[in-house]
Amino acid sequence: MSEKLQNALNEQITAELWSANLYLSMSFYLKKEGFSGMANWMRKQSAKEVGHACTIAEYMVKREATPKVDKVDVVPQGWGNSLEVFEHALEHEKHISKLIDGMKGLQVTAGMADGVHWNAGSDFAYHIGAAYSVYTKNANRWVIGGEYLHKKYDYKDMRIPVEQFTAEGGYYLKFLSDRRKTFFLSLGLSALAGYETSNRSEKLLSDGSTLLDKDCFVYGGALTLELEAYLTDRIALLVSARERALFGSDIGKFHTQVSLGLKFIIN
Image (cartoon, rainbow, N blue to C red; front, side, top):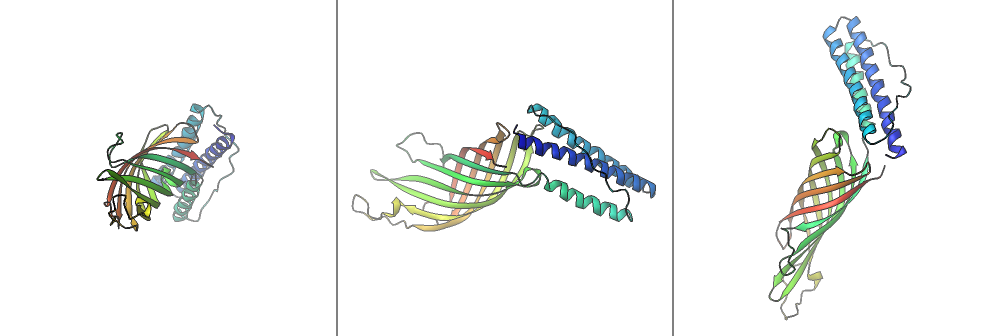
């Protein structure tokens, strides 16, 4: 584990322990004011924050890093009323969540489209892509990127290439992960827009016939199921399946893609 990542995780441990003390202080205040039920609930939240700190520490030990408990600052001791307590708790949760947001990654992917074709004599389609990810709460992420898709179509004794160049913007929602936070399964929804060209814009074919398919702008969306498997703290293997729907295309609206790739965490 890099020193930068280790320091960031230790700072998060300290933040979680400060949160635990804050909720315990709130519990004491609510108990004094006669709100026993609220006090018990806050005490449980304090215990959860300690649990979060321990989970981070266990993860660091498994990665052969050194978890540390740094100095924990004094927390507030009093509030005007019970409503102020919960308003403070809400604002604090928003703040603590932002501490773990913002991780960024660069990824490259490649794979096949519309089936797996190993025989050069059959229709063959492949795609390559690159994207930039910004993580939000709970390992969800925003993704922007670009993709190139190449497919050949048989015509007499020729094979006519059709190419699509698309830009993507979307959001991926993590819905499953293992306890060690090594594997993440996400579902992504993206908007796509780009340009399609047939036979590299050459309309006259070698047999004298004219290609009627026109170069055109395409637009639509994609639904992606993606698995992230972290090989190290900063490198993840990506396995994905995607269904693209593009309108305006002369070669069909839908394309099914499977791909492999690598993601590199850059902060």
